[in-house]
Image 1 (cartoon, helix red, strand yellow):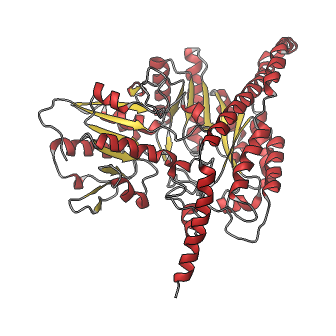
Image 2 (cartoon, rainbow, N blue to C red; image 1 turned 60 degrees about the vertical axis):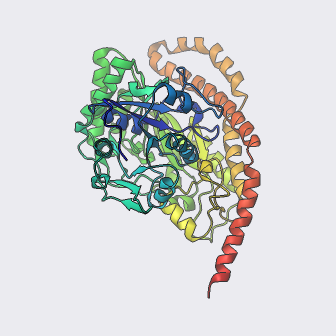
Image 3 (tube, rainbow, N blue to C red; image 1 turned 120 degrees about the vertical axis):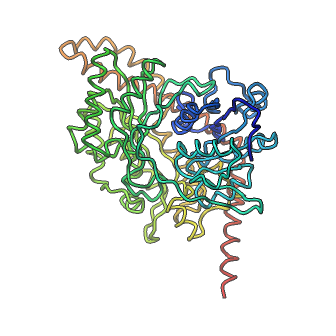
Length: 533
């Protein structure tokens, strides 16, 4: 495939597909966007002869044209600004059916299509190439996209480009040699968020560290961490403040603080920068629970304006933590969580309910597990919670284990669109049923997010004058009042979100699909047993 050589300029459009259904990520998605596609687009933006844009279908708040499904109206967009090549972000497995649908639209109009992201591991490459995708980028795309576009533009042999997959003339899948992971991040341009069309971004994703030093069974992020300099991250933040008046940032590193000394140095730099410009920023990070044992790090984080920490508690049940390979003891978790609380952080707790164990000698009912979760959340004084079901994502050890145990529902019954953590996609451990674990996450969050917090908002507004009692330490008084007011507001909004999700779920035919999936999985397992010699 090649482009029209008579053209002087070409256009690459990168599409972030819409979520299939309303979920807990829908609200935050309207405030931000994915960092990866912006980084790739920023590289192409510096290539001679190329225009580039990013369309985030989950954030079309600035006059974004929509189709009947709620995603972007690609027919109108392509008519207004024809793209020569369209790239697709496959970082979320649940958006893959939408990705293929849009790819088919462009492919039928003669547009070259490229896809990349965590979903496209070895087992899914053939699926993509037979679903209107011309090229799959394997791994990080910043260097690969530049070489691939140059090869397509020149009509050169794409087989020389490392880190891609495509079909040859015989319909065979060709995978080129893998590309080494990036280590020199300073040679890349800073992420240019102005390339995201139609989006209204108020929470900016930024990052310094790629990879993760942990080895969780359910996670797709593996490999030795690779670090950009603290100076580069500070430059990214300062540039966004100066050009976009950005005030709120989310550092997307899987584990903030992996490079401890450099992380503290970054925090000190960010603290001093804010003092110099006389502007206070609001920063959220993802961090390990056991970093609560490092008061020097926590102090540096607070001084830098890091107000919110998202922590993967995952489960308060010892056996589940062991299966996940989480290196923390349940008896330590409450005190560690409270340590973050004492430092003044707002704590967002992330949990997985009903994690499948490797040993079958542990039987705990859904009701007992719910009690464990509710008690832990209350004792830990967590400000906001997110409880999802286990998702055997492509490329994870969890998926391989459940496939060997023949517990994953067949894709034709429960497709990729249900891989968002809100739906059961495999047979859970006995004595629980798939219906029970799905209802359980609603019961846990239903206890946490309630309508009554609307009335608490009024109470907190009336109590605002009590800050006069903290004139000797107004900062401490404000922090106490604000946390209570903010949590009441968040929990009321959470109740609205859950109501929306429940309403959407009732319109969905998942219950019928689940019954069919369970029956077909039994039939499939029986057929394999009967086929053995």
